Image (cartoon, rainbow, N blue to C red; front, side, top):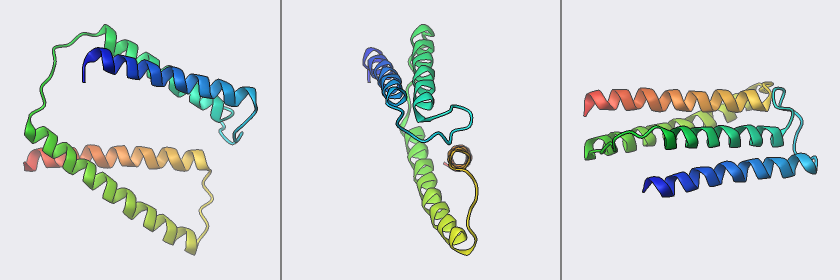
Length: 133
């Protein structure tokens, strides 16, 4: 994908998230359970601005184009497969644990822990697979 196309997509997603967040805030749609952001609309606005900042930093920092060889693509696809399988296993384990004893963690904390654990699983799997292959 070319840099111009990637920049257009990144800026587009950032603006779309901001607009959706503003619409949700205007019509008071969404759950007020987010303790830090105050609502889903504020969270979408925050994520949109983060996306715009990342796209701007990428556009301003011009690096030489890195070429990914077949080995790196192979390792990345294997790590992604391991991460997906771990997500399925975690969902199954969470269903079993929730059936035995109700999980009382709030939704935003639960999702943040889940996302962080998936990123950690992907990082560890990628590093291990890089050494193996």
